[in-house]
Length: 128
Image 1: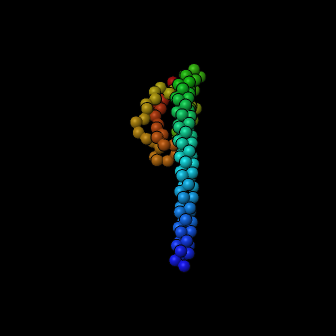
Image 2 (image 1 turned 180 degrees about the vertical axis):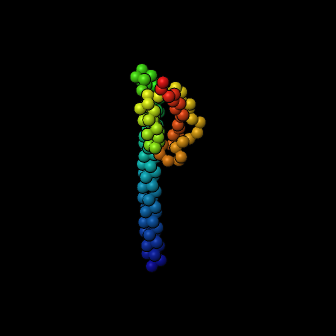
Image 3 (image 1 turned 120 degrees about the vertical axis):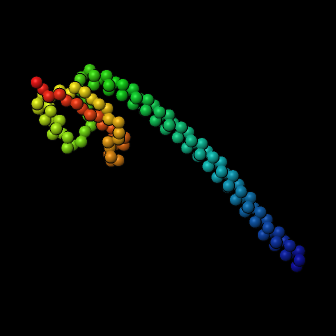
């Protein structure tokens, strides 16, 4: 009977060892898959970073061309507050001339809308 008990215990231990080995094998496969997936994600992130850098570089190039276009066409789009539209229309109606632009030094966005919105003082001279 003692031999049979030893045999049952050995079989149970063998099953446990097999289960542990199977678990460890699955864990190794899972770890390899995770490493491969991690490498893939890093490669995708690097590609996104490269594309972002290209887009920013193109944006910088567009700024220069925008400046050239505005000088050539003598037209500039200015952001302003809606309540100042009537004032600007009044100046235009009186044929007042823009004589100076003084760049603003602060952030006039008030924390709303476009971050970092900066304004400038437009100085007009009454028409003669």
